[in-house]
Length: 388
Image (cartoon, rainbow, N blue to C red; front, top):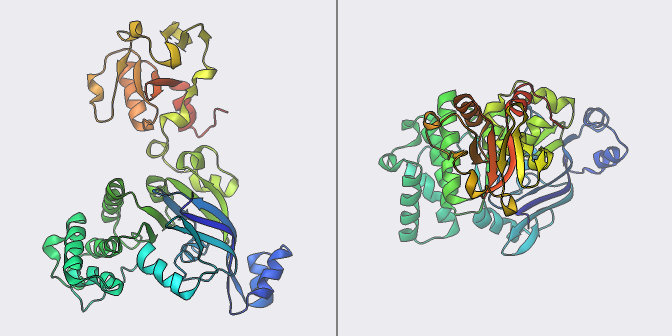
């Protein structure tokens, strides 16, 4: 079950959106509707599903509708037409049609938000800022103190707990905002360009910290960004938006390898594939490799074969001809022979292993061989071509 689901959502910034909605149905563009009615189309026919525990990045240029869509989730923007379902305790609550009491409950219990401009209260200390939402929830003081101490430690700000926001750097202020959202213990975390105002090095550090936190906490995060590199680094899936519409919603490697149209293709043209692509998205699948009975040809050039046992696992007699590599292992320790690696290997690691060993990589998923990765596949990825 999706934890958040947009179903043909339109957002019109007007008291009475009916005129704009009617023109949308006639096929008029956002600009045409603005000239004719003065009404702004923020989002048009947006449909997407966000699964529990993933980071969904809404990405696009300024005015593309990404923040407008995000703010529908906690009711800061009103859905003019369509449905927006948020899962809560096994039920689907339609934010577009829920009661005021349900919306308040979702904002205080289910959904938390981190703002671009931090939105810290300058007269309160770090501790008091983080505790503010818990007070709104009516939590007892002892429980609030425990939760605040946990989140301070989580974001590395324990020693700054009694400081005011103006005594902190921009990156530290953003961590206070993140800790405040995490203290609410909401399963859904909304982040509206939270790092865009920060220096590049601080920004990269906070991106790494967010990914580390996500591995610990497994929240569902909806993250807005106008930076494709940031989106590709953070996103489990990415929705690229233009003029209020979702142009493509895919995994990062699919965005790079299979752009939906010229607009997306232009976006990804200068992306470094080493930071995005993995072995599974590049490999030549086992079914496309030459096979004779239980043997698979991994390199026709030197007539190199491996024997596979039942279930496409590596045959015991083949172990001496293959070496294994796991994440974190020094590539320099590998010899000049084929290497068995996890199918999720990053392209950067794959290139280093290929260079070090002079042989192709054999990819496995839970010890089941699934494909081969060699020069052809790696070159195609670097040149931005689809193997098809």
